[in-house]
Image 1 (cartoon, rainbow, N blue to C red):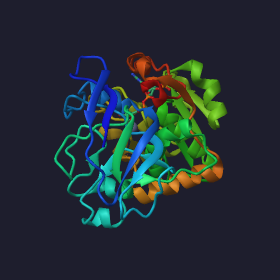
Image 2: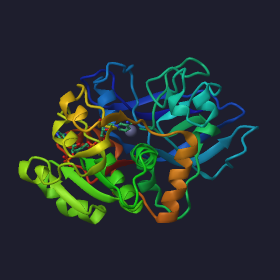
Image 3: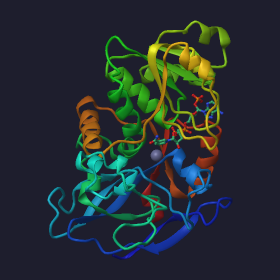
Length: 348
Ligand code: NAP
Ligand code: ZN
């Protein structure tokens, strides 16, 4: 494999800078992909700054990749050279534990291999992510992209898309269900599109009054400013499911009071500090707090196929890689509509 070019950070407090490295040769069941686009997930920012305490440097972020296949190993069946492939948050797993056997590799009992800052199962090197010009991956962990979709807007489906599609399916968002989405960022805007598409009554909670019009356009039946106590009170005891995508520390109490009896608040956002809540809000309605992480390889392909059939992609702002540090700062100011995507042409 020729050497790879990308952007890396070398510590929790430094900016991302140009970085060259090498990837291993693809094996018989692996493909090499020349990356065209990579989405910018808030997890990339948490990891670049070691907010979860598991980062390894130098760290090349990026797990929302779309690219063109440049090489297929001798045993590869799913892809041909020249085709398009998409790669998400995990790139390997043990492949023999019960969740892996079910195609739920993200729940691998030995721990799935993350796309970056993780130990590669093949050669023990540290994985480097998609803010770069290429990737090498086993075909099991790469996906087909429906041909009608815009490739720049497909990248974010590989994380923001599947992370919201999977819990909305699991908790059966659909006709007759009232579903709340907390936070209108990369994950939130995909959650809204899916909840609307599945036929649920979708309510967007936001701290940003200026996002109201966009939320309605993206599929919200109602928009609630979460800082308005009266507007929040008016929604009490009415939700079947609330999906929390917020990236910063916050209390869950204001939302738990909005659940119906036996309803669930599912957390997908991963703030640096754990959320706070009062148990009284749970016992008073036998409510559940749950969590959900991305999705397995089978469901990820189902999600992409569903997006192809329903013409769903992310709303993106395409940036050159040289603007990545600025994009991180804008994420922190809630100033993204609604996913930054890096155009890898800018690396050339
Ligand atoms: P994002 O685009 O930055 O969106 C986060 C949204 O949260 C913001 O747009 C904002 O929405 C809201 N928010 C931010 N700060 C807030 C605050 N102080 N108080 C209340 N609301 C606030 O981030 P993202 O890429 O969607 O990621 C969201 C979170 O999900 C991150 O923590 C990320 O690490 C996590 N994540 C988890 C998984 C998983 O598998 N579970 C996968 C991917 C990402 P409003 O302006 O509308 O209030
Ligand atoms: Zn992500």
